[in-house]
Length: 340
Image (tube, rainbow, N blue to C red; front, top):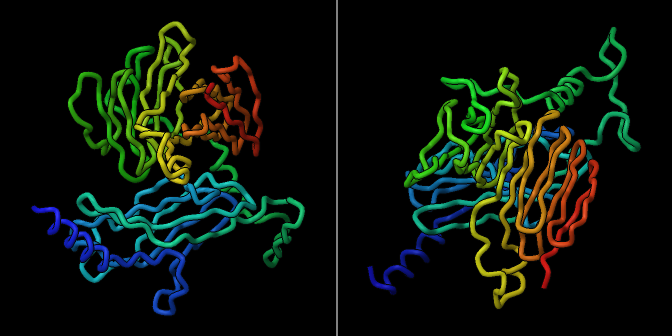
């Protein structure tokens, strides 16, 4: 196809794209974030397809307009007349404002909808949190909130795979939501992960549009650990001689950080969110690595450096550029800058 024809096709498709996440549309009153709690929300947006039957949608979200996190939306393929796309997001921080938008993709085209925001509820007992009325005949807190907090703090469920993981050699890996792909060592392409499977250490997992669980052996006697990861692509390794430590390395290109437009360079990033419960996991970026202590955390490589943020628990960050060791608690963050 000639250049002029390609540009014309792109222009026509862009005219057909109507992502309206967060819009105040009387025809679609449910557009936006619904079911918002302290750590959970369901994102919704009414959209029309770029090209019927071949357009997919994802939601990007985060605490800034850089977003950084992605989750696949359903239905996966948009019908000709459009649909209400939705996706649940979990592991959010209480009393925090999040930005989000819907992004449509078809062929090599990508169209983002307008930015929208929602704010999670305050944590129970937090200053400024409104007390909830008791139900008739009951006293105390709301049971559903207690269950939500328990679920958020609970250890991730182990992955059910054909074989048990082997220390330093293999892991049990399974999708929890969205789309997950795996590239095994010496493999030529990523393959979809539709159920629990055994993969060798040294595999690359793509959880950019989904959430994946990893179950690994801690010793040779059957003890295991499980962690959940979402929002990025990573290489996973395990040594036989590190007491079961799982090392996770961010993968994916940042492109050129010397972009002529400063705004473009500032937004280049690759990121990964993780959640565990007392396991041995260590995530590696370009300029630092983070060892967790039963927590929920995020590591991102950006043009400014490697950024670590903790939303629950505690993380020990090792700034490999400056040789510093920093302990981060919930709500804290650290940027390990490259040496210029």
